[in-house]
Amino acid sequence: MRFLRVNLDVTNGPNLKFVIDYLLRMKPSYTTMKTFAQIKLIDTITITDKIALIPTSLLFDVEGLSLPTANIMGSYIDSQYIFNVSGEMYSRYIKGFDLVSNGSTTINSADGGFITQRINELHDSPFIAAGDLVKIYGGVNDGEYHVVSVTNDTDIVIDTALPTAQSQKFSIYKQIKNPIYTGQTTIMTGSSTLTLPSGNLSAGVSVGDMIFFYGPFVGGVYRIVDVTGTSIALEKNITDPSGLYDFKVFRDGLLTNFLLQDTLPPFTATLSAGNHWITLSGGNQVLTPSKGDILYVDTYPPFEIFDVDINTQRVYVVPTPVVNDSQVAYLERTSKPLGFPLELNTTSDKVELLISPITSLVTTITGNDVVTFTVGTNLYTWNILPGDFFKAVNGPDFSIDYGYGAGYTPISEVISSTSLRLTRPPTANQNNVTYSIARIR
Image (cartoon, rainbow, N blue to C red; front, side, top):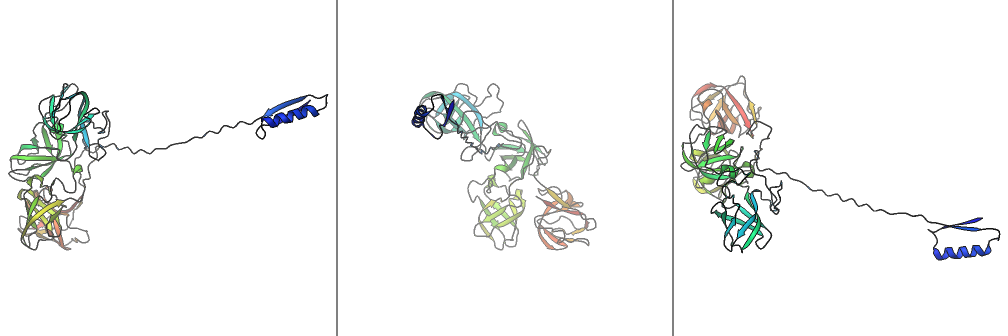
């Protein structure tokens, strides 16, 4: 018996038949031919791995996480994201699928909830407010509109007349922006608590927000450390005169470089030659200067603010003005808030470095903004800088609070290794004042 093995990887069908016929004719008669066809089968498998890098941002509105869960603007489905494509941040307040439009600017939802809490909801009133954004998903009215007014619990007026349609799917959003909340309240000098008008919870007022007052006087800026219903507690006692004030609650993290100033310039600055203090008038509703801000006065170089006397609407600046003049002005803040972590039992974003000399004392003169130190002091060696604080540890100035804490006065100039200039002169003649130097950031 003879065998023929043919590799089909190198030959084809017709050639194989020709070879077999030939061998059958030429083989010896006593032999039998067995033909085997051999083929190698190879499967080629292509695997394509696609790696997609998708950045995820879990953004929350405030340290207290007080606002409701927010959503992707273009989706009716709940989501953890609170911003839209343009970068604006929103929080969704209400949604439904029963919105009715009738050819006018009034839209209706039978389930209501625009003022009063629905089942399983918790908020105060007013809830939905002018300026809120109405998003309709699909249909002839697909798009975004703004609330003009809230008529009642089931009807709101928007800025566009909509064609008649039934059972429309919708959501209403509130943009997360400054000011967070506005209104009027009565404050008491020396108190650290006050009552806000109803609606502060729906507006999103939270621990860590800032509040300032204006009206009969321009008041200071205070940090909110507790919110219980309409009652809020402040980080420090109120130093402004008692009375009824307008107020604004704002969030440091949402401030732009131009603070709350919508239109520039909002102020008129009055300069006096040789006087570090500049008076700002007009624009009381946006007057929130802070130490370290930059004051821009028309036609003059920028002034750095070293101190603020908010009740008299004055700021202490460097360099010293050299002319008497009155020009338009605006504020700019170049620093951003540090914030504070949730796990810490604090609402302060300040870090303080304190130098407490052991042997050195200081001499102060009433009305003189220059203070002189005794032996044991070298302000240059200690790297004391303008913007640091002089802190009286005893004497009459120890209990005076200019807005930075009792006894703290900003330093505007380091004159020599043993003398410096304060933004406010001491209130008493003293030869042996114990002191500290603080740097707060």
